[in-house]
Amino acid sequence: MPSLSRILAYVLAGIPAAIGVAFVARFAYVTSDTAIDGASNAFLFGMIAAGAFVGPAVAIIVAGNGHKRAARALWALAFLAIVANWSHTLGAIANRGAGTEAERAKASDAVKDDRAELARIVAERAGMVFTPTTADAVTAAREAINAAEAIRLRECGNGDLKQRGPNCRLRETEEQAKRDALGVVLAGKASTDKAEKLDSDAAEIRARLAKAPAVQSGNAIGEALGKFLPMSALTAATFQQGFVSAIVELLIAAALALPELLRSDRSAAAKRDTDDAIAAEVSARPVVVTDVQLIEPPRPDVETVGRFMLACLSRSKGAEAAGGEVYARYLQWCGEQAVPLAALAPNAFAEQFAARCLRAGIRTRRGDGKVYCIGVKVAA
Image (tube, rainbow, N blue to C red; front, side, top):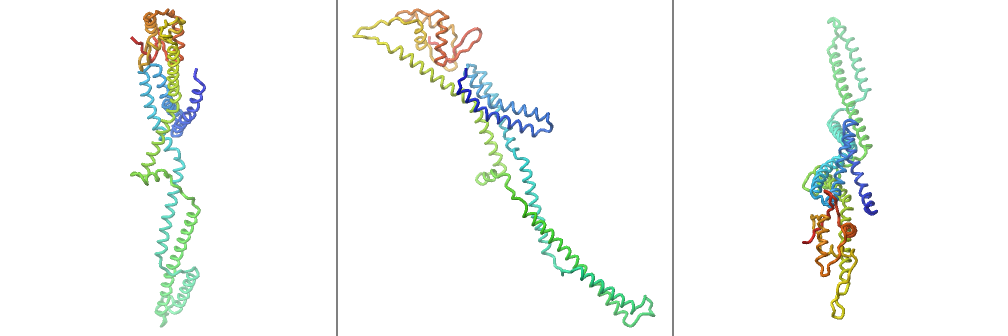
């Protein structure tokens, strides 16, 4: 049964893993065209993320159980899942503020357009040269034409040469001068109206710019990195996002694999402690008393299993020893002693041997109807 500490470690590591899975799954859903496509893509992205996070831990467990080829295949699959999920995480990070960035870009473009329009209006207004004219001046100019026309009609008649007075030509000239003056006044009034319109537009734009919120940079990190890296702000931001997503992927995968790695370390330490205790137990017995060599006293049969393991079994990475091979070597070892030892029966040996393997952290597996000790080599 897993220890409480391992369960707690998996729970704590599973929290960021679940968040990471949800992060890429949501990205897949919101970037899909339809709800069905979104659900399908979310499932696929989430499954890849789960494989990327859990795959290394599973590969370690399988390798610890002695299935080396399967472990290598799982490592390759976990690597591919990590690479794929890294790209998904990168896309999710890059897309996390797409709406806000779009609004920010829209606001920034609006401010730029207003400033450009204001500059154009100011330049056009500054280039206008005219005499300011009011509507009253236009009215006065029209009344002057009417008066000149009336005078001309009295002096010149209705076009009959017999009715033309001596000052008819002068009155016609005066009327034409009044009309020319009206043209000047009308041009001045049009320029005045245009200038007022430009001033009004400029005032409206200035008021809009004054009320516009400050537009923050949408790529602050990229701009900061671009200041000391030989790359553009956009490239620097992309590089930073890729680096962050890769670190997150590896951290989550490492957190989920850590309990198994720590468990292996504890098993190895427990095995060393057990071996030291058995060695101390065997070597603690005195062999010489008053210069007389002592004959080894008989020991209970169960002691022969521990002594046999110390003498004939050794750790060997990648090796496996079948249970029948171990028992046969045990029988041989019992007969090789100076005082032959009574060997345990197969069932009794198996019980004692299994208990000591558990204490020493030696793993076993079943295959082809046999029991194999993983990572153990039998001495010849």
